[in-house]
Length: 216
Length: 282
Image (cartoon, rainbow over all chains, first blue to last red; front, top):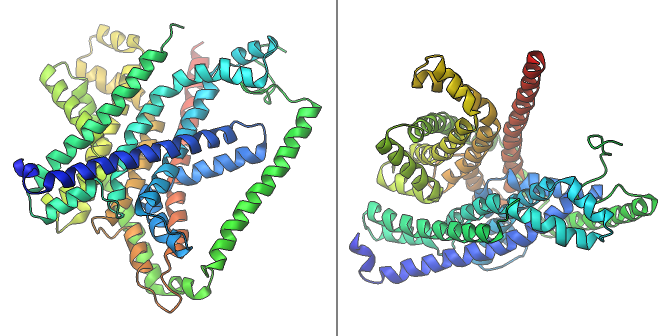
């Protein structure tokens, strides 16, 4: 277990840890933005946009994340797109997670009782007022719990980026095992790091939930 | 118009559209068709521009041995999936039983097991298993990793299903003098499985997708075969990465959609069955 504090191992581990967090945070941001946009498409009154949203979500939810990483890291350079490995990873991970975020938000909006919106409209509220004052605040509460499981899964999925040339925790694991340290002690430290990350995300969401909770 | 019989066009966000709104939606529709067509054209032009539709690049798929490789890869994927599905459902049932146990140590041990393996990245788990035990046989590292992770998730699904069975069901069975095992096996679990089957199959779709992690531990599954084909160009046209993605991707999507369709079919069947039962009882 002590190998982590020998040589430069701790620096490598720390850099991997920070890179995992950076990758997860950027992908989460992209997923949230793209997912909200797709959800807006999927609940819009324009059939073509609904169809587009459905097609996009079906496509991305049923493609393995590894295949997406493969397509982005090896496919995009063939089209003359040259980003850093991190940017490619953010694209793959964010695009994949966005389809899950979209589904969560869409079902959250659909759980708001129809009567709430009708009451708001009959009070003369505009579309914008109905959306921001009545529907979204109620949808946000139902959305938080499933959204937290999506965002707890995201740092776990980010490990795949390590196999596609992003130097995060998985590649730290690779480097350590090439150096010949026992796989069990490496696994112990990497496991600790991931447990820490998912516990932090879970606590964050619990805090948000308790702040938003109301007696209905 | 009564409360239960609303027009299908009214949603929580929009009223049923009037003539003006319908015209506006039509305009948006036309604009978005143009936008989407433009996007598709842009993608097509980018692919065409870089010569990705050059027939030489797609040449590899005409060879029998390449087709055979893809088929073998598909079979290897399905084999790993089948084993992982059976093992993870078994493990899930065992862990769920453990988490619902009356004995505190068993409950704690199972809870710790489930929480740990649910929080671990699957890739880290599979690679650790690969280096530690299965360096010669990557398939078992993949199957065992998938089993541990998905088994834990299945356990949570089954447990929440058992907890969602109305309490009266279990109490009635106890009152009839059934033992705990009998109550569990003949009353609670059948009802729980029935209501949880869609989520369980949903998790099986995840299992199927995650078999593609075999690429990283050199298990010869579909994606690994694809990478091998793509990294060995047959002629001067270059590396066929994009053709390979365009061939392998639809195979995965079709497999997942088939499983999802199965889940929906079972759900619809279960719902109509439940309705039949209540109407005959009433």
